[in-house]
Image (cartoon, rainbow, N blue to C red; front, side, top):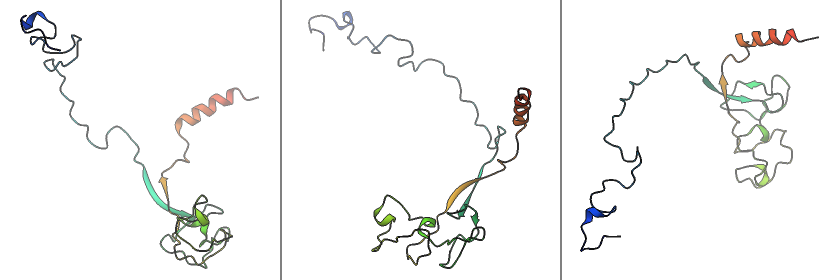
Length: 153
């Protein structure tokens, strides 16, 4: 929308004299003073606890950690519970929603997923777990427990 050509442009609000569309504070205020950015904090500051992650293979039956992660042989068994380790349920390609319950293209469905098989696509299921001392009692827990002990009968 342009002003009529016979009238001067400064009489209209949409004329050339306007430098910004809205008169609100903060809209296109590039001339205002800005606070300088604070210097970056050094890494490792802030008292954060460093979290480490480890790669673990676990038994599907008893969830004990399996030391051999690279190659699990067909005859390997869990040292804790004695179940087979080279099974579909311990495989990374196992998916109950997929065809034949496997992500890889296998021709014949393996009926029992907890028994050893000679699948060429077998890869041990590797889990990423947080390594740390989560079992240690925090100092807040002892205070909380003392508070709860006040109300025990």
